[in-house]
Image 1 (cartoon, protein in one colour):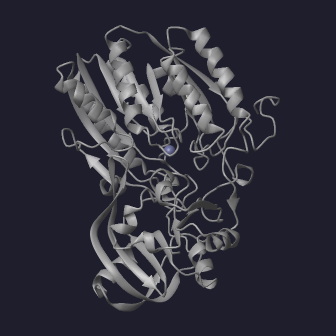
Image 2: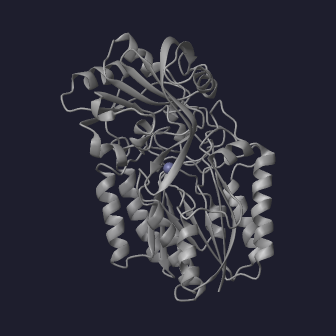
Length: 488
Ligand SMILES: [Zn+2]
């Protein structure tokens, strides 16, 4: 059995001041055929899963390119066309094929292409024909178009947010796709449009119990796969919003019914799935008053994982003005400041301007006398089994504040982002991290308490105030009851 795999992944915040080009893919992760590492990346977990099958002699695996860019702004057209054609030419060269497995993110929008993944799947289908099985895995923060559903046989999606189950999701995609290619199952995809835009962390209820139930239903054989597209509110896509996907073994009516039932239940979670998001000063006051340390305080909207630059200084400036002690912050993206720190050297004191450089809404740069405490070339942090690059990074100290400056954008995934830069978090009272919820998995075990701060910035965090130009379906919270209103 001949199987082709490839992975093109990024998440596009169309409202971001950033733009994304090939350099962003090369900086984050770019593996030509055969050069994918043994460890998975978030969206390329299908590679190691397929290699295991190839090693067992089950399949003849033909690897294409795998690449990922840290979420950012609109992808430039030449970069999209280059990556699209690279993978499609590899696919053509690999023919004839029994199956194709693609590890995609699902929220990539390019200048000139609103539905990159739908386009890729449609063009791939044209090459391989109707008999070849196409399986795809998506991140739930994506836009599920009809084009994607029409051209894929199997869709699996990370159920967890934080996405701690990306390896299982890749395995499940491979498992179902190969079973279908062997004609052991006939997968059919049912979708229900939940018509809402919300943030749906699965670390707490109601989503925690909901996801546990979906997994149980899969185990009980109710369906081959059940998953939820959460949607990505910073992407101006006609397919924006939450959707429920049920893949059955040729039981479309049952799949449709199940997707609708689960979708209506999910709609009932609107507005109550997240923990309280506190105002910046209140969040810092509560963190400072806590007795169980360190308190982990998430700067939820200045999350590079959501496509913003990650150089907002607003929360840091509040902490400095309040005179808080024992604070560490990771990270602020500022390659220019990192360059200056490297030039100054470890132990140097210098007047440094850092942060607040890429948007009008992320606060002003901080000007301070800083001490450079650690410099690391090509620094990294871990995220489950994967390794996430931070680029050249500098730890700086201002009084009793420790700050990690990085030069490859990344959200905070793991406490080793601090320890790798020589910062002992057990001695800290407050850890400020830029992440919406991915930090949760690795930080929760070391946190005395976890708080969430909502800081206004470049991220479009309230759909009622965001100028979407492509959304035509009624969606909560833009309208109160999208199921009562007719589409415009
Ligand atoms: Zn995601």
